[in-house]
Image 1 (cartoon, rainbow, N blue to C red):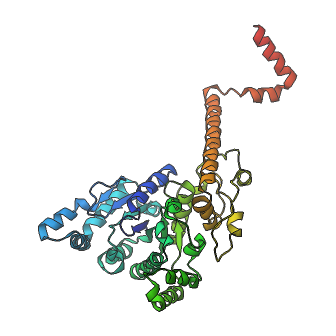
Image 2: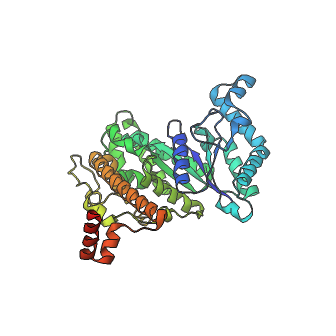
Image 3: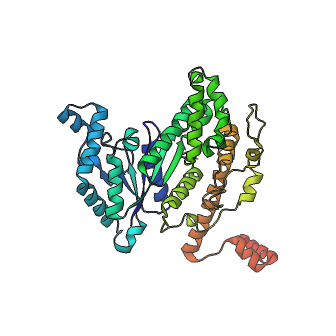
Length: 398
């Protein structure tokens, strides 16, 4: 029963960047990962792929052979893959065997499927859904859909409603464990001021607060009643919520990886909590003391910011809080929206301290490996301060 995730989302949402970052992240954690490129328009993706649909069919081939445009050719390529599922199943088995994931070890395998950016593939067209269903029924695959969407869209109320509808439609279409993700969260501060707190957008509750914003926009004002009905429908389903992602931030990646692991029931052979055998000389409590001070916000929110001010920067990978506490929306708001400069400086200092600790630890272990000699501080403690001073004086005289 192999596990994996199906990465979907509109063009420009960061799917390929996420797959590349995920490969680097899991490889650093010594976790097994296979990446499958299902985008026929990407013959050379940025990440190392074990399997690529371009070995079967490419977008250019479909366009030239059948005189199709890019969108029509993309749909044709997925239909062609569906008709040749034996090829994909054989390639997956070959990749699993090459990685040593056979027999009982198949449950340790984790595969990431990178898909094209055409949203109709996951909202209306049936080929992708049937491909996933066949993998689940015939091969026992347990997959989760990871739906990436650009975070800057939440700054516009109309675009945010469109994201909600797209997410809901995709969830109903794919019928998989589903994780909606606001990607590029680190660029959110560049997109303008958030009208509401970030947790309003990630938790998708009390959408009544969104209606006044929609009525202020001349583009959506005339659809006031329709906007209310759409918000009611989304709340009635109660399915949509969002995680956040900054691919270059290891705490953000860790949070998302843990959420996806829980969604599919995957237990990694190398637990996330054992990435370091020793903890650096700082703890979450000491991190709090060095965290940036929250500032007073000039914008008004219907939700209180008191909870955001109480949030603290997340700890490093070597000290893991619980999943519920790690990288909450309050922390994300402080880090990427309200206090970006302060957090950047604090994180630089944190990385410097962790790097100094790692260098010192490596030097200490190399000395022990060289001859079992002890650090002079350890000898001084064992022999006593006065005796050690005598040794140092004799050594100087010699």
